[in-house]
Image (cartoon, rainbow, N blue to C red; front, side, top):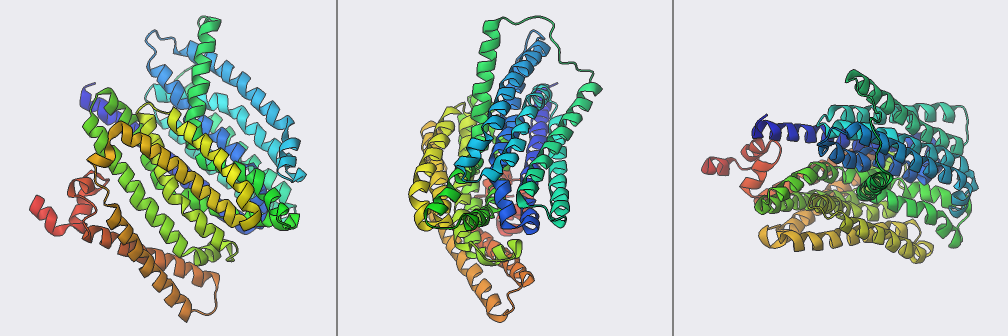
Length: 532
């Protein structure tokens, strides 16, 4: 296979994994909207209290360990990969059985810390998700190490599709049967486990098709085994932390919001409902950062390869372009959501409760996008420890700020601490990225022009939204939906035209984007002919 074929194979595999991950992210964000419509804010509260534990297990089996294992398999020169896989399967199984046992046993203590002992059963159900991590990680790591991305992508999509379908089917059935919200939440977590089980079956079918058996042909020494497992756990957990930054912030809120609201004098039931209202923002935050995530995934191996080739110019170009894209898209999503949050809230969740808090939370889309992209850049440069340290520091920062702001400002305070924490990670990451690449001196970001475009977009969107609401007096969900969608489309058009008119995008940058030649013809008709 020549160099060109290898490069094509590399990009094809990367795009397959990125496409699957994008689909998974969108589906994961979308289903919580109908779930809230069916189960209500209290039902969403129950599910979101335990969701971070599932999200961590999911990330470990999807991002963390498969990436580390694929590297081990691809670098194997003595054809000992089956021995490696067997050893890691036994090691990971032992570790995660312990994790399962601890989480299952300490569920009452965690529920007590959340100020809700009724969460014990949903938490115990979530603990089972860690039992699937070893096999999923080893199987996906094996296929990715052999540059076969199909099984990983198909298993991810199948897992998420079954999970979402099971969650919604079980929720509709139980709510119609009059079940309480805690049973509904437990069933929703069970839906996630069903998805993981399907993913296991899919991977087993691929392994059997290739006649692969994970078995040992020799014995690794205890020293080598401990060294391998230490490296695997350290690297896998580090990668996972960068992938679940927002879920870690959700975990802090799960532990602090209800007790904090209760401390402010709110009744326990009202505090739980308010937490559910606050959790409405999580799908919006996840959808807002999904583009940055989709860009970040293929960025890691590309920058790593550029660093290996010592092609620093290419690193600077793609680092600058990805950060610029995250800034432009993340800024638009954050500002746009803040302007249309009231009709969006009514359209998606039937009422406008908590719109102020959700509008504040939307600002985290900008900083979250920059944090995710910059973390991927640092990971590609081999500096994974930096974003891990920054994210863990941000978790502590959020916990400290919640203690002060929650009793005073309620869920708006929790939203503000998320914004501050994501901004902290983004700023720290960007400082390190600049020190390593000098990207802000090499690349131009036209920040002033982008901010001017955001202001113009906000003005146009706000005027259209207010004009629509002036003539529409019913305040129905359909009317709110039209106002939200039409305002966002108008805002996007104004923003795009402004960016083009102010020359924020360079000709060569647009060419590098997907379908770049078509975009140039549409946006820069005259310039394309001059540059042609």
